[in-house]
Image (cartoon, rainbow, N blue to C red; front, side):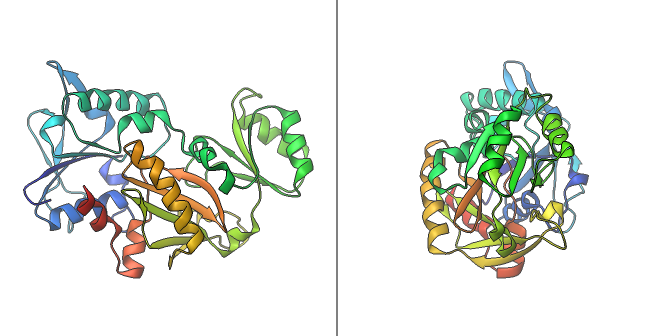
Length: 310
């Protein structure tokens, strides 16, 4: 990465936690390798003078002061950067999709965007996992009350989650279908109009919900196992779960390689799959996290491997 210029499209810098954020770790590694680091938000993108540009800032010392930046006086074309990392967290809303449309145009102009905008446009992270349904728990995508009842009749405990959620938000566990739970379903489906995902509950989650990073099509050998705390069934770190680095097992490696083949075909060089027991539950391609925790706990650096593969 020496003598390169990398642009990161992220949430606002002051919202990124340097102790946990994978985007900040990427910036640090590039800086360590004597590359320059720049940042902007989606709102800073624009198409002007027949080219996609961005109003950017330079982060001169992402290691010591990642929140300190120097504004650049002029708007720069995205094609002028060696790498453009799209690292904006969900939700995948209209603003997110419009940014991807601009990034696709920037690609046509010569920009090197990671991950490919076309893949981020094409795939919903939860729906994408259905391509590997043989590895998934029993899963349905529904919006009708009758379908919920039929699914609950098959399982003692089920999980309900929106298709565009992240960090454990709006995920519910139903052990029975009470009037309150029907109201939750009605609300999440916008009065039975919007699709949601239901799955049978996997008690193996108490043995770890594994975030496995897929780098250039290959699973990284160390995963972040996330564990629910207290009475919660949610293992996501953002929902209060605790993480522990662990070596992946043979099943996780097999699933990771299988998913990795498709991701490479679609131009997704950095992703994260989630597995509970031997089951695949989600494929994260927008802004996968967990790299910082893996590095701190195992001293193995997935971002270093990512940058070497570019």
